[in-house]
Image 1 (cartoon, rainbow, N blue to C red):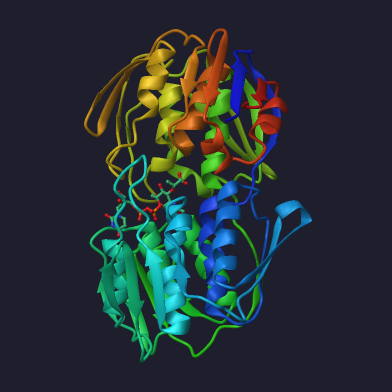
Image 2 (cartoon, rainbow, N blue to C red):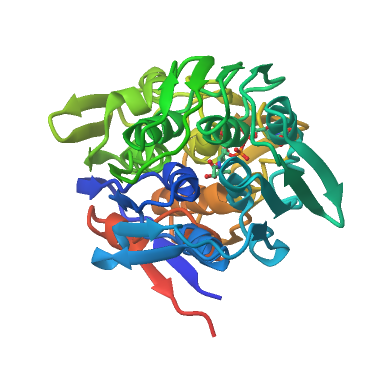
Length: 422
Ligand code: EPZ
């Protein structure tokens, strides 16, 4: 297994291009199942999760061609041969469950493995099932698989979700585009990736309104046609790299970044003493003074502070002036990066869903282990600001969500290299 060697190397300067959003692409790709006409995505990120979703769609009989070094995905699901998403693929990536709604809507049946737990939590699918059953689907759990059917097609309905689940919103909205009649989804998630999905579905002929608010209304149509859609910028990659100059000093411009994608995150950085300025081509970020100050964080559904930036923010708070309390309200076990940061000299106490971080002057490089996607990058950020060398192992987690991370950080002056595993 590869590892990454990082050496604290002082202020960073230059530009980092931000890729298309992993979490938008992972819901846009299954949307191809809704139509027999081709769907083409541009600005797709080059990530292992995208390869996993490609393999899943191909296992169903869809054609997926990766063009222009992976930045264009040309897909067609004209001749599907299966409606079963196998455990072998789904266990690797929970987002595989996003084929459930489209398969059910187009073919009236789907068999999708339950994803199983993952490092950050149990991550059940009850909210997906409740929403699709509200549309008339019959779903039963057998041998670890959800067996869903809607022989007479789905019927629009009014449904309020108990929690604003991102994936459940995506599955229900995609399914509702081909249901008979109108669906009103209440307490819908408001993430930019959902807005991007709706914009793509609208290009395919779907009748949807209210995306980005808590109430989304979908008028079912008989069929959807093909389209070409550009994947929205990745706000989590953006937020992650905004923390690089915040931790190391210097000034970095994140190309493609827009303030609207990271409003609450940028506000927190401003309170911590980090200046974020929107330029015509991106976001420019620099520390206001030598050391940031501690701020408290509570993770919430969009537009609140993103849970996917909690680990990275914790790395910043490790060397802040004062004490910061980070409350993780979305996942039940998303502090696995804390013990690794403690190995680097951080002062962190975790009690249940709350981590209390008392800033130290400087972290010390150490061998650490990545435990999940966002934890892996928070350790790299910490290593860039620490004294001495840090080796981050198990970087396959990183490859799921960050393309060319070494090249992008080297480009602004970081001392970082990938060490091939034996
Ligand atoms: C999406 O996951 C993202 N993944 C996650 O990003 C992100 O952390 C999460 O939304 C929250 O923003 C993709 O978009 C591919 P949820 P998702 O359904 O849809 C519970 C990353 O790092 N829940 O909003 O799975 C669940 O257990 C990944 O890129 C139920 O209880 O998130 C969790 O505690 C990690 N029942 C909470 O809701 C359900 O049926 C949020 O889950 C569904 C979810």
